[in-house]
Length: 575
Image (tube, rainbow, N blue to C red; front, side, top):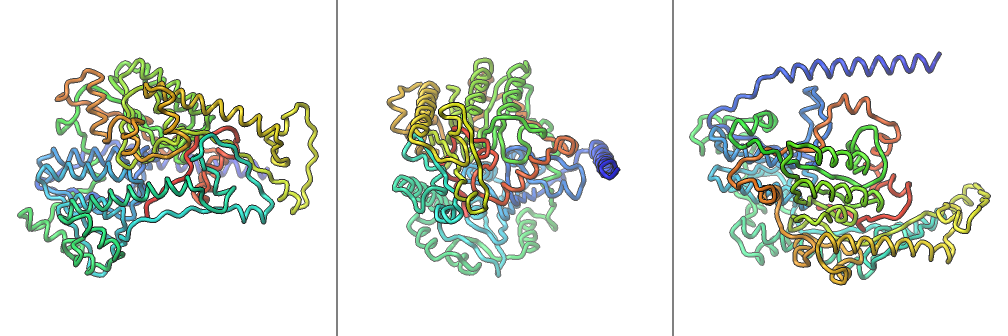
């Protein structure tokens, strides 16, 4: 009786929520297109995460107001603002932005393109760090308040190692890998960096700092040496930031509005919300044509299997089953003229990566395809890009990491501490090779090496085929080493540096669409509603997503599943 009542109550709550959502959805559907006043200033506020894939849609006003804008939506907003004669300026307000260098470069280039139209672009900063300031350098004027702080002080890398902690717990990770740079599990097996890891991380820091310094220098009319000297003085109080020429003025937000209104010849700034402007169709501004180009987003850790909420929901997973079906659907759609496969993934399961690559190659044979890389397309993320089509990445995209790794955990010591005892009966020489109660034997380790080496050779062959180069040229660039986009371009692991605009140009060329002809960019997977999510939740999926948000130790489900992985060695976050 108790279970029945609980089930009944949950059903009533879900039904009530579904009814509320449906009502608000109908009201929103009936909303009229927002009015754009003449002389409008687009208030472009970027806050928090800026995902590739559209998050779940909540048609409730107080929840929808918290929804982040995606990379594609930001691109769409700025190209509309550039073409729309009613929009006179953009007031850009980045705050606590969570994005890697690839996405930052995409947004900054879109801002620069808008600025080249001749319309004012003003950046107003609140508690800015390196990411927010990097974006703000695209503006013709940078402003912050007088009591704020510019947290700009260079870059640092922090790598955590848990070996000594695990030893105390009686936990042992056993790892085999192909490629001397393939150090994805070093945090569990070592107490310090290898020389190979230090070499790569130092190279990454040098490149990113050079890029940051050169960007600031070009924006602020200073030499790189002057900017570097200033960075060594950071972080800056607002007054110090102005003295170093990093900002133009110290004003409150209402004063920024007044100043911009005066610049536009207005008595009061005519503000236009970016959320309202999103609802203005690009076609109404003559920016869309009849030819449909699919923007297919492959984002997250690659894993085999299914999930009730579709392509991995917001749990950071790229599941091979649903994604293969999505690629197949696009392949069979006669209205799609071309495809941009947008990859943002650290890799993952080797088998799942191979399943996705096969379907991507089948798609490429039928539809003109271009690969566009986001923040990260490494290891398995690089593997699924090997369709043989042009590959575009940003200067600072993390890519490559051509290598393979296997890891298993031996919990025998922990079990002993807890008083837990297992007895194992086997049939077969290697039946306990993946047991968490026994260490790898020498014979077992040799058996694993055979599989790892074979998968590594297969990885090299796929890359050689996709890049149309001999395997002998690829192998020295592999070894699990992570490359930045500019380095990958130099090593011919990718074809060009650029973002969405360049990807569109290339796919139009391949699809024989005239350069001047407008296209319609259609994003896949489409935005999901809260109703899809409500009736697709699984308890284990929700718990996993919650755990992953708290524990930054790779994908829990990936390691729990076991197997051989094409996984990038580490994550890099800019702070």
